[in-house]
Length: 65
Image (cartoon, rainbow, N blue to C red; front, side):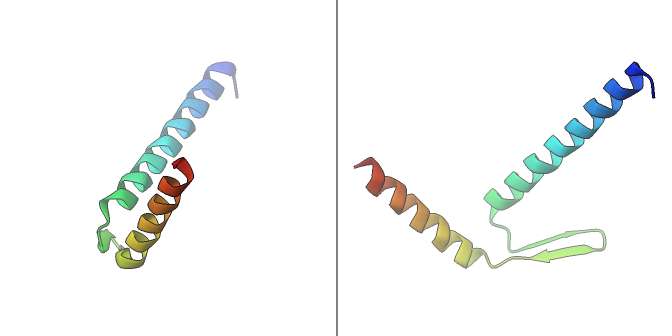
């Protein structure tokens, strides 16, 4: 593999990883209960996630005070 190919694949893999991480972050923030993409279906328990987020937020406020 020559230098130009290495640069291309490094850029490509980094971009794909960044896109997947950003997509995952948006999916977590959205608090959707069900997500389906083609043959993949994800069902989440968003109520317990929201409780954990609230507890984490309260802990952060207590630390700041």
